Length: 335
Ligand code: SF4
Image (cartoon, rainbow, N blue to C red; front, top):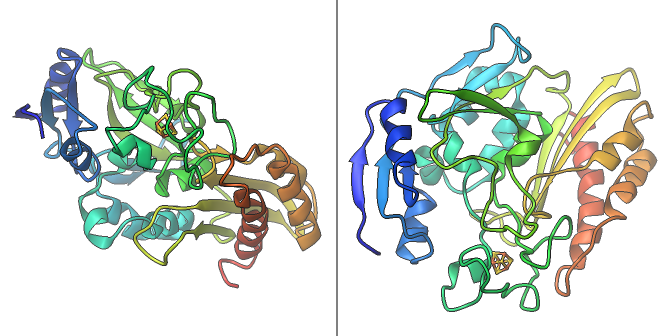
């Protein structure tokens, strides 16, 4: 690990000011990904600004604005607290399921909500500093493009990077149409629609998100929804616990009788960002909630997949996972 300075921020203003003043500084919150990356020499910050003591942990109802009637979770709240909050469990069980599907109890106790969104890809070439990787070292090439790419993307990849984004929590947040609230060193605040928060790689795979350097995630807003009792997070992985998703699906169905008013479907393990299955959603709007329609919706989405040499299985896996997640959501999470 390389030398770095450490300061402990006392409020959001001093934290964002310290980071903005140093282009190679990083915020330190739970540290569950950043410290690993520093030990592996992948991340090399010259300074860490510890924000773990800031009072941005509250979980509360939203009383006004576009998300009125929803819930807000603090950017520095712990994943465990968000997953286990009684109001989140009742109104956003999709989020609880997704958080509990990720990592381990110990890591969820340390990891923060904002930090979860900022975790970096688990592409093995990204972690191996002797290999080329445009995300770690822009312009060096992509080891995975012609290498072993079983874990990699089937949607939205570029010749520069074929990595996938690893968070489970964020896949549920994408389906929930969450909004990320941030502030900068000038005290200016802005809200970022979840679909716009993470990026596809394009020719700048080193940029995972649309956050500017120095912007601090203060909260994540969850708008109200009408599918809490018909939602499900399906995670498919190589082993039963403590593994990242080969592929995941967050599904919610708002119903009127036997007809689907609106479907929400987001996929993990398939792209550089949470992948909203808009073609499947469009197909299902106004349709009967039948297995046949679920299959046709999955076909509509997966027809555009572009698998790599070693991950062709993800197309069929994605197809079946969309159908199963929708069936589970329709049955209130029961098989
Ligand atoms: Fe790096 Fe992305 Fe290629 Fe992996 S897929 S080696 S993260 S550029």
